[in-house]
Image (cartoon, rainbow, N blue to C red):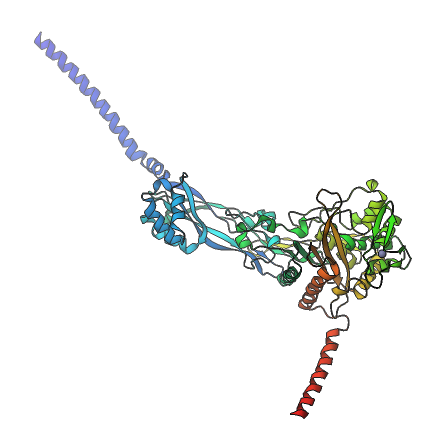
Length: 597
Ligand SMILES: [Zn+2]
């Protein structure tokens, strides 16, 4: 019995032993499998928890003027952030970070005590501040920094509304920075890196998976010197007449290239976020206004193109007249206190006669006049390359009552942009051929090769060459002997026209009392025009005459820019005569003093 039991125990023990042995082998095998065969797999998996993928930031392209002078460039910066949950001592950290960032301790402390776990403590700071934060990282758990670039505008406020600015993410927010963002921004690459125990990137572990493709460079048609001359002239005007706003456009009529486009008041895009957004607006392109008398040029050009002689009398002006069920009046200056008398097209432009223009418009008829307004580009988008171009507004001609037609003849009762009006004068200057305006000259790849070169815009004939030459002569006489005299540039022949238009009420019913838009537009030299210049001044104080307020700005821009472009003088200069006269006087004075001494 006992031996039988012993035998049973022995048998069981053997079985158990075998069972445990098998289990042991299985466990050992598993361990060998895990520790030896799958070792690399698990190690990699453990590391991957700490390794992350980040973008390699592409460098944003540079914006240059036509001569390669930089208007928007990048500098290296650093942004500093905090993961507030990882901070051990908020007050201590605040004191140290505030010192490094040169900021107020309370401001930092407030941010760290906020409800958010992730906060920016400073963005796009001097790169050296970022270095200091990195060097002290062991003393500042929870605080990290990220290398970054920042857009800066070395010319400050120059061409601010054209160039615009970027946001913190280096994306275009305004102006051409926004319109051309896809060209400028490039494509980000990718890198992996490990994080330390504070979840900060360890630079030595950076591994680039894909390089970034840098953005393309943009060359504008703007000439920085002419832009500066133009902005300076507007600033001087503002000091004298304190307008609500003002703008000026300078264009090469042969190519449609915009050489300068300035808006007053302006802002510094380096501090854009601290300025009112109204200042960012490119009014010369985006704002509509009633052009007033500067539009008489279209009425005259249309009539000349239709074969009406510039010397044929079109009206007898007594200063005011009931026309087509409405009232039209002229602004009268000496020696025309009793009206402009018998008016032909020459006098109509020279003395800016509204009654003459009204009669001429009635004679042309609504459909015809409308078709010329359209052909001159006033009712279409200019497609110059700006993002915010407004389109001129005018009712369809079949809706015009006769008085509306008469009013449109002298530029009231419709709305256009200053850029569109510049196009009208450029078309006349260019012998009747309209060339689409443009603001971008070339886009280059980062290696300097051309990505896209802009040829002169689409050219369309609007009026015959003869009609354009006749219009030019009318505009020249306006500056030589008419209301445009203050636009005269010494030593240059100038063609131009004044405008003083009432400001339409916002509800569209009638006009604001005593508010005007003063303007002057023209070109020089007359026989081979190099520059078309348009100046529009919104609600000047002290005077509202285009001749008084806007023409001197035109003269200032024209005189300096033509000199800068080395355009030869084409008419005898008064100054030279005066200089010689003064020199004679000085010599005479000196000889008298010589006798006396
Ligand atoms: Zn008149």
